[in-house]
Structures are given as structure tokens and as C-alpha cells.
Length: 383
Image (tube, rainbow, N blue to C red; front, side, top):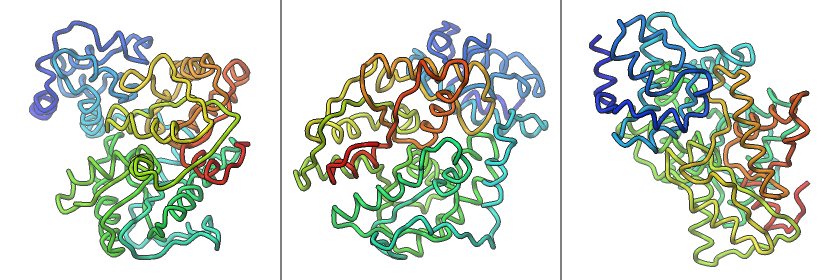
């Protein structure tokens, strides 16, 4: 029981008051499970019994429970550690999409892997192999191909990010052999494979000579900023989400944007919001777009409902209900567009919209913040 007790101690779980507040905000509590019961299971069961508790794999690790806990228990982080522990007993969650994406991330750990992932960059965009500022693209080239049927055009996020940076006078470095940041491997308990990606990406980033890393993905941001330094103490880069960089530039009135005829509502991605406390910057960027109306949902910032799925694991009917609930909340604002800062949020929401039974009542146009800013700078209408 030593390993479990260490996990419980690290995450303050011994201080659980059994008050049930975490259950009241847990998006998947309808399954009859909860963070509180997870702690109870870990405390009362033998190793295998604790490892087999289903909630540790159905949990969204959205951190809503952390926010409301009066004893400051780190439930989400405990869940991540329990997944690694569970793997020691051969117990894992149920992979979605036939485990193809999880397998791809493992493939990326191969040291001699050579990829062809730069074709998305057109000739008119200015990028380099080296430079002070690196754009970490993430898995956009793979998601764009894998989820082609959803017609989300996810690589537009990458192109828009580079276009926006170029307009700000930044010609970023882009790594032609960049690997997945490893977020999903870490949060499904594959710590060993995550460490491989940290080592490989860290070495490549060092070769670029970068001092600052910019990403447009909420999960890449959280992983690079918080988790890479934990596993590699020498990883000492400034990590910025695109919204942070833009908010800084906008505060100095270095650029002027105009966009008329649309209203938007903003979805706080869990990794950018609750995990990283980046709430104000995306909203500052939206408010800086002239003529754009911003309409907030009922649950925002640290109270926001998540997109319903994490790390391509255990996506079932309850998860779809979470997504539908969030989309209904977005639609109730009367906004024309749902703005996100995480490609996975778009994937999960679009999947819910495409459902035969509930899709029509929640269908809504979505756009990534990077794409919206790109079009606003050009004063184009969002299609």
C-alpha cells in the first residue's frame, strides 16, 4: 500500500472531509462514482482493489473538484497518479477511436523517427529552423488528417498562428521533427513514454536556440509550462499561450483589429483555465476586436464545464451528455460563434453535434481564437 499512500499524501487526500462537495460539481458523477469515493476506495481497499476502481478512468481530470474542495485535495492529480499505479496491474481505461491516437503517440517516442509534417506551411508564411521564439505546433497535422470527416480544418489553427505572429513581426522557429507534447500519455499513466517525449522534444528545442515557446493549444501549454520542468529541471523556457502574447501586445496598442457583425461566447478549456489560470488574456483579445460582441455563458472561468472527454479514454453516453450540456449553455447566450483555445475541445464538441439523436439542438459554429484573430486582422468574415 506504500505507493497508494504516497499518492494520497502528496495530493492531500488524507484531509478529505467526506463532505461531498466534489461530487456536486463532478461532470460524470451520474455514473454513481465521484472523487470522494475514489479517495475512500484508495484508503480502504488493497492495492488491486484500489487500482480497479472505475472512476480513476472515467474521471475527466477537469479539476472542477479541486476548485471547490475545502480541504485542498488535489483530486485530478491523484487520479493521474492512480492511473499509472493501475497500469502495474494491467488495468487501463477504454481507448476511443480503436486506440489509434494512443498508438500514434507511442510511435512518436521512437528515437529514430523521421516525420513529414511541414507540408501545411505555405510559402508565404515566414518560419525558420532556429530563432528566439519557437512555435510548438502540437498534434494538429495528425488530428487534421485523422478527423477529416469532422471538417474542422484544424491545420488552419497552425497557419493562423503563424500568420498572426508574422503580422506582429515575429518569424518563429518551427521544428520539422517535433513530437507530441505527451499530454495524453502522461494523463493515462504512461509516464515512461512521456519521459521519452520530454527528452526528445527538449533536445530539439535546445537546438533551435529558442528562449520563448509559443503554442495555441491549451494542452500543449499546460504540459510544456508545468510538466516538462518537473521531468526535466533543465527545461527553463518562457512558455506562452498565444492569447498571452496577444494580450501583451494589445495592451501596448501595437496592433489594431477590426471585426463586425458577429457575437461570440468563449469556452474556458480546462488545461488553460483551471490548470493554468489563464482566464483574462483570451477575453482581453476578444474585447480588443472592434465590433465583436462577447456574450458569456453561465459557467465561466474556474466554474466552466469541460468538453467532456480527456486523453481519448472512456468516452461514453455520460460524456456526450456533458458535451451537449455545455453546447446548450453556449447556444443559450445567443452568440453566433463558440470560441475555443483547444483543438480537442472542437473535436469533442463537433462529435457531439454530429450525433443523430441530439446534434441539431446543439449545432453551433466554432472557431479557434487564433483563426478568429487572423481573420479579424484581415477583416474577413468567419465562414
